[in-house]
Length: 163
Length: 163
View 1 (cartoon, each protein chain N blue to C red):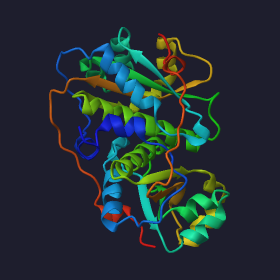
View 2 (spheres, rainbow over the protein chains, first blue to last red; view 1 turned 45 degrees about the vertical axis):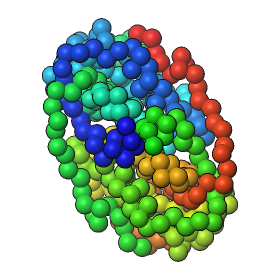
View 3 (spheres, each protein chain N blue to C red; view 1 turned 60 degrees about the vertical axis):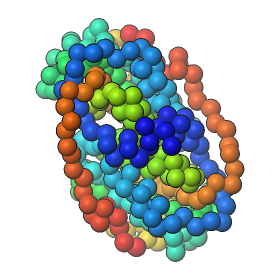
């Protein structure tokens, strides 16, 4: 799939079919996340593939249905030990997440980037047995799409500042 | 260009040829930034195309040569008025930046994402006449590449947490 088609066509998918996302495809998606740019090339992103504990994790958000319906989730963490500047590190992790969303879309897999679960991040850490320097910053639901939603964006004139 | 090829092949470019990046291509790159996902679809990113004031901006960083050599720069701002959660908003802006880097690469244009200039963000704001709710979070240099650098990433085993 072409870059432009992926960037403009990707949408958040909240309803999924039952098909399993193969380990191979998950590997390709993680590989995309790995190749994002970061300040000082510090790569402060860490990932966990959540399959067995997915339905327990679903209890920690009001978007339970998305998590339950997904085949698998990725939990994305900020590794403070690798970090050097919170603003720049978070931007870099956002780049890594976008690489994974685009990669998934190009493989026919739908994703939903969930931030609301950060309200219960300590509970997610406890559930997954994550401690120390890792901070949950996003959960990504993955599965084969069972919907084709539309979305909107601000007009370009609203985004570009005239100098 | 294929998504996978762009994600794995993109590198930071710090030396550029003299060719001009057309307005049309800049428009396509901004359009890619526009279509990133964001929490509550709040789209907290704003962009400025810096051409005339580029060489003055180059004086505000120790990476002057990159900025001077580039044909044009994009300044990326976080619009606090649209924001709702700094962590999630910065992740979303990182996604928007990555869309622009990938889009540029697929168009044959090299980019360098510069964060060091944030040390002098008030001076950048003054130079560009930006005030109010906008916070500079990144500068992206753009131009036709005059180098093919290599880069490295942590091994996947270092990034994926076993549950």
